[in-house]
Image (cartoon, rainbow, N blue to C red; front, top):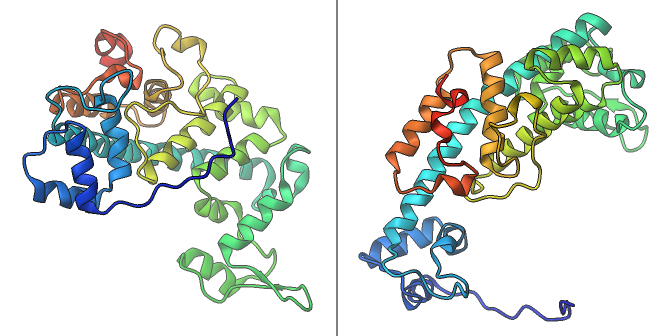
Length: 311
Protein backbone atom coordinates (compact mmCIF):
# COMPACT_ATOMS: atom_id res chain seq x y z
CA UNK A 1 0.00 0.00 0.00
CA UNK A 2 1.20 3.49 -0.86
CA UNK A 3 2.64 5.41 2.06
CA UNK A 4 0.52 8.60 2.31
CA UNK A 5 2.41 9.87 5.34
CA UNK A 6 5.41 11.07 3.31
CA UNK A 7 5.98 14.80 3.49
CA UNK A 8 6.70 16.85 0.36
CA UNK A 9 10.13 18.42 0.89
CA UNK A 10 11.23 19.50 -2.60
CA UNK A 11 12.31 23.13 -2.84
CA UNK A 12 11.84 25.43 -5.87
CA UNK A 13 14.71 25.67 -8.33
CA UNK A 14 15.76 28.85 -10.12
CA UNK A 15 15.92 29.09 -13.92
CA UNK A 16 19.62 28.26 -14.15
CA UNK A 17 19.07 25.24 -11.92
CA UNK A 18 16.18 24.07 -14.08
CA UNK A 19 18.29 24.39 -17.21
CA UNK A 20 21.15 22.45 -15.65
CA UNK A 21 18.74 19.72 -14.58
CA UNK A 22 17.52 19.32 -18.16
CA UNK A 23 21.09 19.19 -19.47
CA UNK A 24 22.13 16.68 -16.81
CA UNK A 25 19.39 14.41 -18.08
CA UNK A 26 20.87 14.50 -21.57
CA UNK A 27 18.74 17.17 -23.24
CA UNK A 28 20.62 18.93 -26.04
CA UNK A 29 20.34 22.71 -25.62
CA UNK A 30 21.91 24.76 -28.41
CA UNK A 31 21.07 28.21 -27.06
CA UNK A 32 21.11 28.75 -23.29
CA UNK A 33 19.57 32.22 -23.53
CA UNK A 34 16.64 30.88 -25.56
CA UNK A 35 16.22 28.03 -23.07
CA UNK A 36 16.14 30.42 -20.10
CA UNK A 37 13.56 32.59 -21.88
CA UNK A 38 11.45 29.51 -22.57
CA UNK A 39 11.61 28.36 -18.96
CA UNK A 40 10.73 31.86 -17.78
CA UNK A 41 7.76 32.37 -20.09
CA UNK A 42 6.39 28.83 -20.39
CA UNK A 43 7.61 27.15 -17.23
CA UNK A 44 9.55 24.00 -16.42
CA UNK A 45 6.55 22.06 -15.15
CA UNK A 46 4.41 22.89 -18.20
CA UNK A 47 7.19 21.83 -20.57
CA UNK A 48 7.62 18.61 -18.62
CA UNK A 49 4.33 17.30 -20.03
CA UNK A 50 5.75 17.56 -23.53
CA UNK A 51 9.20 16.33 -22.53
CA UNK A 52 8.00 13.22 -20.69
CA UNK A 53 7.51 11.02 -23.80
CA UNK A 54 11.09 11.82 -24.80
CA UNK A 55 12.49 10.36 -21.57
CA UNK A 56 14.09 6.93 -21.92
CA UNK A 57 11.76 4.08 -20.95
CA UNK A 58 11.25 2.52 -18.40
CA UNK A 59 13.16 4.56 -15.79
CA UNK A 60 12.43 7.90 -17.51
CA UNK A 61 15.37 9.53 -15.75
CA UNK A 62 17.31 10.59 -18.84
CA UNK A 63 16.30 11.74 -22.31
CA UNK A 64 16.48 9.47 -25.31
CA UNK A 65 19.68 9.94 -27.26
CA UNK A 66 19.60 12.96 -29.57
CA UNK A 67 16.64 14.68 -27.90
CA UNK A 68 16.82 18.46 -28.28
CA UNK A 69 15.00 21.32 -26.62
CA UNK A 70 13.83 22.43 -30.07
CA UNK A 71 12.01 19.11 -30.52
CA UNK A 72 10.11 19.67 -27.28
CA UNK A 73 9.36 23.27 -28.25
CA UNK A 74 7.99 22.10 -31.61
CA UNK A 75 5.60 19.75 -29.82
CA UNK A 76 4.53 22.57 -27.51
CA UNK A 77 3.90 24.89 -30.48
CA UNK A 78 1.88 22.19 -32.24
CA UNK A 79 -0.32 21.71 -29.20
CA UNK A 80 -0.88 25.44 -28.89
CA UNK A 81 -1.97 25.69 -32.54
CA UNK A 82 -4.21 22.68 -32.02
CA UNK A 83 -5.97 24.35 -29.09
CA UNK A 84 -6.62 27.49 -31.12
CA UNK A 85 -8.06 25.41 -33.96
CA UNK A 86 -10.32 23.54 -31.55
CA UNK A 87 -11.54 26.67 -29.77
CA UNK A 88 -12.69 28.10 -33.08
CA UNK A 89 -14.62 24.91 -33.88
CA UNK A 90 -16.09 24.58 -30.39
CA UNK A 91 -17.25 28.20 -30.54
CA UNK A 92 -19.35 27.38 -33.60
CA UNK A 93 -20.84 24.40 -31.82
CA UNK A 94 -21.54 26.33 -28.61
CA UNK A 95 -23.28 29.22 -30.39
CA UNK A 96 -25.42 26.81 -32.40
CA UNK A 97 -26.34 24.76 -29.34
CA UNK A 98 -27.37 27.89 -27.44
CA UNK A 99 -29.56 29.02 -30.34
CA UNK A 100 -31.20 25.61 -30.66
CA UNK A 101 -31.98 25.31 -26.95
CA UNK A 102 -33.44 28.83 -26.89
CA UNK A 103 -35.63 28.19 -29.94
CA UNK A 104 -36.99 24.84 -28.74
CA UNK A 105 -37.66 25.75 -25.13
CA UNK A 106 -38.96 29.29 -25.52
CA UNK A 107 -41.37 28.35 -28.30
CA UNK A 108 -42.73 25.56 -26.10
CA UNK A 109 -42.77 27.23 -22.67
CA UNK A 110 -42.32 30.96 -23.03
CA UNK A 111 -39.65 33.54 -22.25
CA UNK A 112 -39.02 32.71 -18.60
CA UNK A 113 -39.52 28.94 -18.60
CA UNK A 114 -36.15 28.37 -16.90
CA UNK A 115 -37.44 30.02 -13.71
CA UNK A 116 -40.02 27.26 -13.27
CA UNK A 117 -38.65 24.21 -11.46
CA UNK A 118 -41.37 22.03 -12.98
CA UNK A 119 -39.54 22.16 -16.32
CA UNK A 120 -36.62 20.19 -14.88
CA UNK A 121 -35.96 16.74 -13.48
CA UNK A 122 -36.31 16.51 -9.70
CA UNK A 123 -32.58 15.70 -9.53
CA UNK A 124 -31.65 18.96 -11.26
CA UNK A 125 -30.06 21.48 -8.88
CA UNK A 126 -32.63 24.15 -9.72
CA UNK A 127 -31.92 26.52 -6.83
CA UNK A 128 -28.17 26.35 -7.46
CA UNK A 129 -28.75 27.05 -11.15
CA UNK A 130 -30.92 30.12 -10.47
CA UNK A 131 -28.37 31.42 -7.97
CA UNK A 132 -25.65 31.07 -10.60
CA UNK A 133 -27.74 32.98 -13.15
CA UNK A 134 -28.41 35.70 -10.57
CA UNK A 135 -24.67 36.07 -9.98
CA UNK A 136 -24.06 36.31 -13.72
CA UNK A 137 -26.71 39.02 -14.01
CA UNK A 138 -25.43 40.94 -11.00
CA UNK A 139 -28.51 40.40 -8.85
CA UNK A 140 -27.65 40.77 -5.16
CA UNK A 141 -29.51 40.38 -1.88
CA UNK A 142 -29.82 42.92 0.91
CA UNK A 143 -28.27 41.12 3.94
CA UNK A 144 -30.87 42.64 6.28
CA UNK A 145 -34.12 42.54 4.35
CA UNK A 146 -33.03 39.66 2.04
CA UNK A 147 -34.72 41.52 -0.79
CA UNK A 148 -33.22 41.36 -4.26
CA UNK A 149 -31.14 44.31 -5.43
CA UNK A 150 -31.23 44.55 -9.21
CA UNK A 151 -28.10 45.71 -11.01
CA UNK A 152 -27.75 49.26 -12.28
CA UNK A 153 -24.82 48.33 -14.52
CA UNK A 154 -23.79 45.21 -16.42
CA UNK A 155 -20.95 44.59 -18.86
CA UNK A 156 -23.45 43.20 -21.37
CA UNK A 157 -25.49 46.03 -22.88
CA UNK A 158 -28.56 43.88 -23.47
CA UNK A 159 -28.67 42.96 -19.76
CA UNK A 160 -28.34 46.59 -18.74
CA UNK A 161 -31.15 47.56 -21.10
CA UNK A 162 -33.41 44.92 -19.58
CA UNK A 163 -32.92 46.16 -16.03
CA UNK A 164 -33.27 49.80 -17.12
CA UNK A 165 -36.82 48.99 -18.21
CA UNK A 166 -37.99 45.91 -16.29
CA UNK A 167 -37.89 44.64 -12.75
CA UNK A 168 -40.31 41.75 -13.04
CA UNK A 169 -39.34 38.99 -13.56
CA UNK A 170 -36.06 39.68 -11.84
CA UNK A 171 -34.15 37.73 -14.50
CA UNK A 172 -34.15 38.50 -18.25
CA UNK A 173 -35.88 36.19 -20.74
CA UNK A 174 -34.05 33.00 -21.62
CA UNK A 175 -32.81 34.25 -24.99
CA UNK A 176 -30.85 36.87 -23.05
CA UNK A 177 -29.95 34.68 -20.09
CA UNK A 178 -28.60 31.93 -22.36
CA UNK A 179 -26.00 34.34 -23.74
CA UNK A 180 -24.18 34.41 -20.41
CA UNK A 181 -24.24 30.63 -19.91
CA UNK A 182 -21.07 28.68 -20.65
CA UNK A 183 -21.03 25.49 -22.69
CA UNK A 184 -20.70 23.61 -19.40
CA UNK A 185 -23.82 25.31 -18.02
CA UNK A 186 -25.72 24.65 -21.25
CA UNK A 187 -24.71 21.01 -21.00
CA UNK A 188 -26.06 20.77 -17.45
CA UNK A 189 -29.21 22.64 -18.45
CA UNK A 190 -29.90 20.26 -21.34
CA UNK A 191 -29.38 17.27 -19.10
CA UNK A 192 -31.75 18.74 -16.50
CA UNK A 193 -34.67 19.42 -18.83
CA UNK A 194 -37.53 17.15 -17.83
CA UNK A 195 -39.38 16.93 -21.16
CA UNK A 196 -37.96 13.96 -23.05
CA UNK A 197 -39.65 14.97 -26.31
CA UNK A 198 -38.01 18.42 -26.29
CA UNK A 199 -34.62 16.87 -25.57
CA UNK A 200 -35.07 14.28 -28.31
CA UNK A 201 -36.00 16.96 -30.85
CA UNK A 202 -32.75 18.81 -30.08
CA UNK A 203 -30.63 15.66 -30.35
CA UNK A 204 -32.35 14.33 -33.48
CA UNK A 205 -30.51 16.48 -36.06
CA UNK A 206 -27.24 15.04 -34.74
CA UNK A 207 -28.45 11.49 -35.34
CA UNK A 208 -28.25 10.31 -31.74
CA UNK A 209 -30.72 9.85 -28.87
CA UNK A 210 -30.96 12.45 -26.11
CA UNK A 211 -29.02 10.40 -23.56
CA UNK A 212 -26.06 10.07 -25.90
CA UNK A 213 -26.27 13.74 -26.83
CA UNK A 214 -25.96 14.52 -23.11
CA UNK A 215 -22.67 12.63 -23.08
CA UNK A 216 -21.46 14.48 -26.14
CA UNK A 217 -22.20 17.86 -24.60
CA UNK A 218 -20.49 16.89 -21.36
CA UNK A 219 -17.32 15.74 -23.12
CA UNK A 220 -17.16 18.72 -25.49
CA UNK A 221 -17.61 21.12 -22.56
CA UNK A 222 -14.71 19.36 -20.83
CA UNK A 223 -12.62 19.64 -24.00
CA UNK A 224 -13.49 23.32 -24.29
CA UNK A 225 -12.42 24.00 -20.70
CA UNK A 226 -9.10 22.23 -21.14
CA UNK A 227 -8.42 24.16 -24.35
CA UNK A 228 -9.50 27.51 -22.91
CA UNK A 229 -7.23 27.01 -19.90
CA UNK A 230 -4.29 26.08 -22.14
CA UNK A 231 -4.15 22.44 -21.10
CA UNK A 232 -2.20 19.87 -23.08
CA UNK A 233 -4.25 17.98 -25.71
CA UNK A 234 -1.54 15.89 -27.32
CA UNK A 235 -0.94 12.58 -25.53
CA UNK A 236 -3.73 13.31 -23.06
CA UNK A 237 -6.05 10.71 -21.57
CA UNK A 238 -9.37 12.43 -20.90
CA UNK A 239 -11.26 11.71 -17.69
CA UNK A 240 -14.53 12.49 -19.47
CA UNK A 241 -15.09 10.77 -22.79
CA UNK A 242 -17.92 10.87 -25.33
CA UNK A 243 -20.11 7.78 -25.72
CA UNK A 244 -19.64 5.99 -29.03
CA UNK A 245 -22.63 6.22 -31.35
CA UNK A 246 -23.56 3.29 -33.56
CA UNK A 247 -22.71 5.37 -36.63
CA UNK A 248 -19.20 5.94 -35.28
CA UNK A 249 -18.27 2.30 -34.81
CA UNK A 250 -15.22 1.69 -36.94
CA UNK A 251 -14.47 5.42 -36.96
CA UNK A 252 -13.96 6.27 -33.30
CA UNK A 253 -11.11 4.20 -31.86
CA UNK A 254 -10.11 6.12 -28.74
CA UNK A 255 -12.98 7.85 -26.91
CA UNK A 256 -10.65 8.65 -24.00
CA UNK A 257 -8.20 10.49 -26.25
CA UNK A 258 -8.48 13.49 -28.54
CA UNK A 259 -9.43 11.35 -31.54
CA UNK A 260 -12.76 10.36 -29.98
CA UNK A 261 -13.60 13.96 -29.13
CA UNK A 262 -12.72 15.12 -32.64
CA UNK A 263 -15.03 12.54 -34.21
CA UNK A 264 -17.93 13.95 -32.18
CA UNK A 265 -16.94 17.55 -32.86
CA UNK A 266 -16.49 17.06 -36.62
CA UNK A 267 -19.75 15.14 -36.91
CA UNK A 268 -21.53 17.95 -35.05
CA UNK A 269 -19.95 20.59 -37.31
CA UNK A 270 -21.26 18.66 -40.32
CA UNK A 271 -24.75 19.28 -38.95
CA UNK A 272 -24.48 22.91 -37.87
CA UNK A 273 -22.04 24.22 -40.47
CA UNK A 274 -21.95 22.10 -43.65
CA UNK A 275 -18.92 22.90 -45.73
CA UNK A 276 -16.72 23.69 -42.72
CA UNK A 277 -12.98 23.25 -43.18
CA UNK A 278 -11.99 21.63 -39.88
CA UNK A 279 -10.89 18.35 -41.47
CA UNK A 280 -8.62 20.15 -43.92
CA UNK A 281 -7.32 22.57 -41.29
CA UNK A 282 -6.49 19.74 -38.89
CA UNK A 283 -4.66 17.77 -41.58
CA UNK A 284 -2.79 20.92 -42.65
CA UNK A 285 -1.67 21.45 -39.06
CA UNK A 286 -0.34 17.88 -38.88
CA UNK A 287 1.44 18.41 -42.21
CA UNK A 288 3.30 21.39 -40.72
CA UNK A 289 4.52 19.14 -37.92
CA UNK A 290 5.32 15.81 -39.64
CA UNK A 291 7.24 14.59 -36.59
CA UNK A 292 4.10 14.57 -34.44
CA UNK A 293 2.97 11.12 -33.35
CA UNK A 294 -0.77 11.14 -34.08
CA UNK A 295 -1.19 7.77 -32.34
CA UNK A 296 -0.56 9.62 -29.06
CA UNK A 297 -3.89 11.34 -29.74
CA UNK A 298 -5.63 8.03 -30.44
CA UNK A 299 -5.44 7.93 -34.23
CA UNK A 300 -4.81 4.57 -35.91
CA UNK A 301 -2.83 3.89 -39.06
CA UNK A 302 -4.69 5.02 -42.16
CA UNK A 303 -7.19 7.17 -40.27
CA UNK A 304 -6.83 10.11 -42.64
CA UNK A 305 -7.95 8.04 -45.65
CA UNK A 306 -11.19 6.90 -44.00
CA UNK A 307 -14.27 8.38 -45.75
CA UNK A 308 -15.25 10.17 -42.54
CA UNK A 309 -12.02 12.18 -42.65
CA UNK A 310 -11.96 12.75 -46.41
CA UNK A 311 -15.50 14.14 -46.81
